[in-house]
Length: 219
Image (cartoon, rainbow, N blue to C red):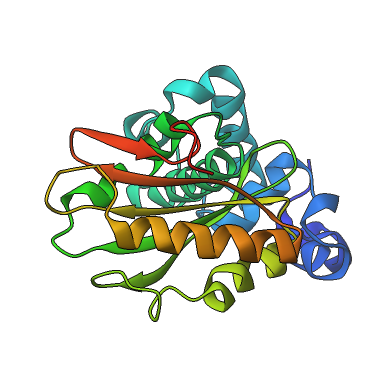
């Protein structure tokens, strides 16, 4: 096995990534890029292949202690690997969230049920109902001046979304819609028909539950 300094420059992981992109790298080469360097005893290629073996053997239960048990891998480099894996996992999970009902929206936006102000949000969806992006449109007491269709559909157009869900929290804890909530919903519904982007639902979320305009037959 060649050491990193014995490889042709174009075959070194960083140079290879730069010239060919990350998809061209083998697993241990990607790990080598994350590690950056090895130790006096362990070349980065040899070290990265040891890390790859641990990943292959028990990826789901990967922990800091397991990585630092690898000879030559200290806590700092082990934490770099864990951080990269966690970041990737979060983005993959986010991209695979499917909204099938208002309860899914409530779970997705549950962190907003503790807010002291009203947050108006949009969730853009692909054709299969998976979340593309979640955005805060405005913060504060809702009215038709603050919640304008232009701001609501700008992200949906950018995302090439098939549908959109609008949602807001009620800091009072009561889910029942106000007259203004209903006026805003009708206005956004009309805009959605013009834009050709389906308004799938308007969901009001609170600590103990939710109100769905679609499920209540108000869309």
